[in-house]
Length: 455
Image (cartoon, rainbow, N blue to C red; front, side, top):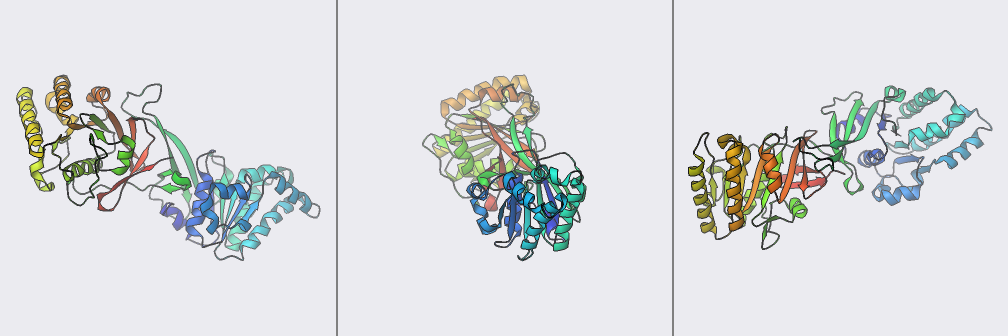
């Protein structure tokens, strides 16, 4: 579904439900309203009363709605059209009755449809255009509109540009708010140009009478001109590097695939001899493992050797690997001799490289190394490792955790730098180098990961 289950269940409680959609301009209120109609209405039974755009422009920007809202069901209630109609009606009725009668006509028409839904977009414009007719009776007018819906059994959606609480919040059966907010990196290294700052979109479920709201806010997107929301990102039970993935070809002779086609498009793949950093923010937990699983599994399927120095908490054993001879897992112990361990490390890399006859993939948990050796010793070791990778064309992915001292070093050595953080129960990823907008990580069947733009 494109809309949260709570909203679908809300309209299924009874006929004549009233929903107020609020939010500042540009947050996606109209797209959400149209998506609700598209999801819940049968064909040709949506009625859209537009106070801002004429029908032609509505279809030009939202061509997909034609199946549920045919042109005859789009009412042009822009200021000139609405005022002309009200002036004619007010010759025989009082101003307040003329406004009520104008909208009652549409409810009467909608009653002829099967399970109809009426959208008024925007409600603020209606109140503004009719203020000379209804005077101080605005709240009574709003109450009457909601009563029309309940008496006729017609679902009603009112779209408002005001994000603050207002009397209509208490009258309507449901209230949801669309919001845009700043998504800032939390490592403390952001700069005035907003290197880590991005903007995201979310829907907030403020009130849905009769429905248990299991999650108050969901991350949302208007990608492709459609409203979609994202459920929480589920965690796999293991970190197995297995065969149940589709092999993704390397994008070139000097680049390897990340195992995630959408990420390959953003990065162009990982270059030979490159140092690539993935920062894991607070709240992500172990859910980033799927990214590493996709990366390692695909490298193995493409005949490449893989060296893994697991991050703290990353549990991986040889039984979790489908080509164990092409994988080396190594993790330093606390207070281990750095020189001795480093020498053994070089031998393991050389062995993998000789076995496969090509550059290897290194996945290195910098938190584990920092814990074992301390930051100062790690700096010297990291410089030697990076020189070695450049000489051998090995591809390296460093995993750093937000708050580590190693982050300051990692970002200055990175060819590619991505940040993964938690967002409303889901996972969000965006590029610092190269700069990208945020994407929602979607785990699909067969362990496939897709990236959906949050726009």
